[in-house]
Amino acid sequence: MSDVIDANRYFLVTVVRADGRRPCTSDVLAKRLDEMQAHCDVYRRDTFLDGLIWVNVPTAQAFAARKCKEVIGSLGAGWLDYTHPSSSKDPESGPYLYLNKTLRPVCRVYDDTQGAFLTAIKPKFPWQSDTRFEQLRVAGSAYGCLGIAVPSRAPDLDWGTSRLRVVVKDVFSLEGLKTSLHSRAHYEVCPPAKATAALIQLFCDGNWTRGPAAILGLTKLSPQAHEEPLDAVDFPPAFNPRGDGYQSPAGGSSGSAAAVAAYDWVDCGIGTDTTGSGSLSALANGVWQFRPTANMHRLPGMFRTHDQFDSPCIFARNLDVFVSALEPWIPPAPRAAKSHPFEIVYPLDYFPLPDKLQMNLIEEFLADATKHLAARVRRISLQWEWSSSYPDVPDPDRGILDTYLRDAADHYLSRSFYYLRDTFRQRYGRRHGRQRPYVTDFVQRRWMQGQGVTRKMNSLASAKMNTYREWLLRHVFRKPTSDHIFILLPISGVTPCYRDDVPAIQTTPPNQSSLDQLLLPSILRGPVITVPIGNLPYISKVSGEKERLPVMVNLAAAPGEDWALLEAVRQILVLSGRPTEVKTGYRMF
Image 1 (cartoon, rainbow, N blue to C red):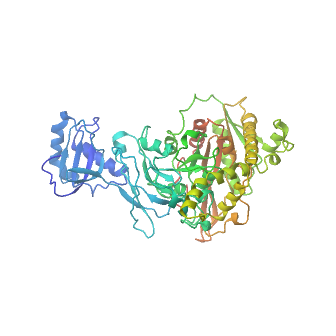
Image 2 (spheres, rainbow, N blue to C red; image 1 turned 30 degrees about the vertical axis):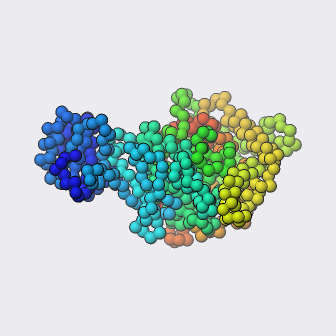
Image 3 (tube, rainbow, N blue to C red; image 1 turned 90 degrees about the horizontal axis):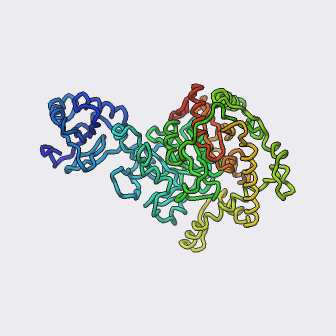
């Protein structure tokens, strides 16, 4: 930088990177400042114009750049300096602190008013070689909340790509940080991670069209599987922004979903789904959710609850952001679809729902899907289909599906749920003698249930679940006339569920039916997308006013149909005039 700049004081400056496509004139410089102001929530033109630094200015345009110094007052800047392209990496456009002849990037700190984060993370920048993550120990300006630092979006203007701001459920390892699983006991005995989870590393590497993502922090969850707000003991749950603001955030990935629903400074959230909890979090918080085809290589560094059913999932508000964020996860799309390749399975086992308004919204979406995909709708009962085509297996109950699968999901899931926490219990026991770690009553019951499932019982349950999966793929997802078959599934009835409601789990067993609609995509190991389709009115006991709850529906497909499913949903929404983006705050639309 120029020697005329006082090295003994600091400056809040704006760096503008010359793009080589436009001349280095004062008009172009003013336009770049306007673009930065409009695009970047970190940048404020009235604050970061102590000086202007124009980098990567071609030598041939040095005279034009020097002429700009004569009019910097009209731009509001105190001084202007410029540099020519060099072998060293030039800084990216954006706001900086210039001190001791060094540029330091500036971030904006937002309040986590919804309590969605367990910890904030110090921002990492593309030029930094250190792979470790560090906590950002900064309080928000509001009482009882964290401050979350977000980097500038201005570099997007340099490269024509967006660097996503991502939040991560606290079940993924981040190098240098502990993993809490939303449990104080687990946090106490969990050592700092030696490596970052493989999936999160894909986002950090920047080897895709959007460049390296900014990991903002670790988000809250349901501790070790299940929790409603009144169950919370170790950490308070996130606040769901939808409706009256006092609805349960629901589901295992509630913190990531709530952050995406509440904050426009968060682009997407990473969560997990084992038996449908990702869909429940998306439904409660009113955001898109996608669980990709099962692929085990994505899971190193992710704390598990089941070897076969665990999967990462992603939450977003905008379908374009949502789709592009999935690029690191999913292989490229296969060949283009034929002219009339679609079929939608409508399972009478799950439809119709009791609520007529919710059902009307689902039927309207189905009508749009049928019309704009030129799809055939096949209305079937899974149980009836099974009774007429069940496989020849040595089981006297094989002719009735719900009898054949009785207890299969519980045995299959609960044993894994118990034994995958052996390391945690052993570490805690070594530190505290024979004392057991605190977990909720629900988790205690699941552990006791899993402890009682023998290897033989688990093996039999596994065989039954695999038999059911193979039957689904062979009979329900057969492709004699359609290239792409999707199954429409409800998530849950939409009714108010307040933070101070007594959880139903206290009066019901912690079992999930093998035929639960939320479990079906996990059994298939194929993709499922949670689609926002409308709002349902209710009278809030909090506000006394008419508020609205999100209504969502799931579309699931056979393994490998990820891109076909995503593009089909985009086609339905665009051609029917439905919104492809949900808003932050009380209402999706």
